[in-house]
Image 1 (cartoon, rainbow, N blue to C red):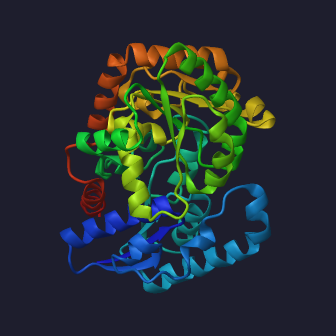
Image 2 (image 1 turned 90 degrees about the vertical axis):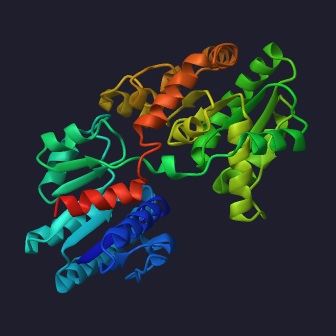
Length: 382
């Protein structure tokens, strides 16, 4: 069996590596070609060009490289057609991946699979119908996504979210973290985002929220695990916050060491104040209650709320079918109500604990690893 796999960013590379490992387990004679990063290379792929060329976000960043990206797209389409694999699997990065699938479908009958369903349940539902013109099968990360894909005319399987395969710190590791940093009372994890724009918009408000919570909860300690792109920025901001904050700085620390420290902090926390995103699922995996906040630039504030089709953007709420995680998005991202929600989270975390457990169960915790489930789904539909 010949499989051509394309990933365009680190998260896709991790999904691709796990999927390839699953395919090799189920069909040892499988052959791979494509574009990927270190996880996919470890499974035997020789990337056609560095995956990092595709890891570009934002109009301002893409435009200067648009011609080069189009050449790469055409190059990949030719490579797929020349090799004639049994299946083309594209992973996330829809702006590049789906254009490749379109070119391949226009010139062949090669089966196409896309891994990670677009969030048509949240906004822009027309994307599913456009995908269906050149995608045969979708591998979904969230359990409620298959009906949306199937309604557009594609086969779709829920294969589990990768968060269920990520390690979680033990109680002993959490206790050791607390002891190392002298934390004996309530601990609030603060996660203001991984991009500079997010931190710029949220850090002042988060600081004000922390000050109000610390005044109401004497002895509160704050821990801030910094994402690498914003570590320098947070190193200047965090010392001014209340709660005798501890900044976990990834600079100069081995990746595995920092990851283990971050996992221990997630497990040790009594609650979290976090920017909206997949971090809510990382917190759920650790059993950590949360309050979610996010603000947008002025233009996005005007446009995006009009496009949203859901009343919450927090994945824990959506997967669990509850609304127990308070989220404050756009105009609702205000200091007073968010501080009250954080205090309420500390006082009554039980409802969230039940929803966090349900979320992880529905995402596939305790089942086969998502990479192996994805591989079974690909082979079952061939």
